[in-house]
Length: 438
Image (tube, rainbow, N blue to C red; front, side, top):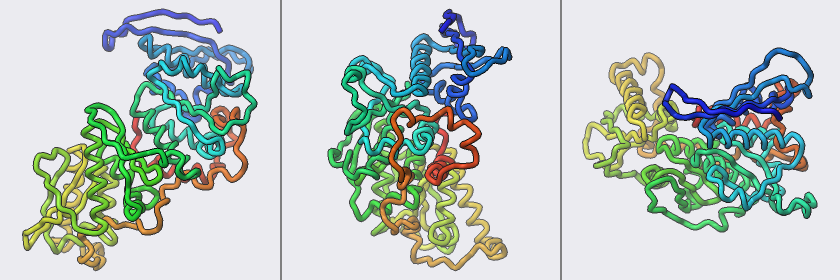
């Protein structure tokens, strides 16, 4: 493949950047661009490079090399992008082989063992599940085989190896834990049976693990996993439940924050929670008149849950209130601006209640004040597997490995308007979450 390679100075930040130019055909370009440009964006984010595809408008068929692929970035980022592009294009032809010994030296790769019977399950129809995880975390993922075993490869193995590429460790870990959660739903105990509680002293990025009591699991998960995601967003920490184990990935401060939130949440299930907020930089407090509490929490906690969802916060009433007229609402979240937004939203509702506007608008539904101390008990008693983005995803036998990542055909008109039910379930989750990398 002809190419032009040169270095240049980038006037934007003074860094020395490099450029690589390759020629590709229309079919390769469609595969690299992906649906609505998603694959190209992921390649850029995962590698840290800029990627552009230019069409000189010469015409030609799929085999005609009439398009130009231009990659720009720091030398190490550019080399990373070239490798990712090569791997993605190799997928079109069949299995991808890597030298696992050589790959062990890379700082942008995580390898994860997946049971062979789960490969199609976690991939989803036309690869939509893995693609959605890539979208969320800004990674490139594909099943690979070990080059050292190529001559011995009979095509049938008890385990597959999933390669997760990306320069951002947080993105790779988030992707890895998401896949582990899916596998655990299919093969219970595959990962969790080997896990123990662990709390790291490392200040930087690491992963803590904590057991969740079986009585608390459903409550901590929430309907469709909403509560788990709420805690993750409020704390700024990756949080996944794999079996009965909570995996908390982030800096030491983030891990401690989400551990606190999860502990308080579980404590709410059986009692009122008392929190010492002195010295904390992740909390905003608001005194709420007692006769407004039922109104600002809403029926079954829906009003306060709506505030949490809109502001990425975690809110509950302080169980240590001694004031006869008010109770203290605790608003937790890593971002002060979002906590202030939550406080303003609740203040507005208090004003509506005190001024009588709430009754005029028909908002006051006669909610039982006795339940306000545990408003957060929302639809969590239906069982502990509501966060099942992957259940029944693959009823039919899994496709061959060469067909797992159908990026090209996913972009074709044949797939439009015919999403599988499994894709819709995951897409619902993705729309509710923040975009982690755009």
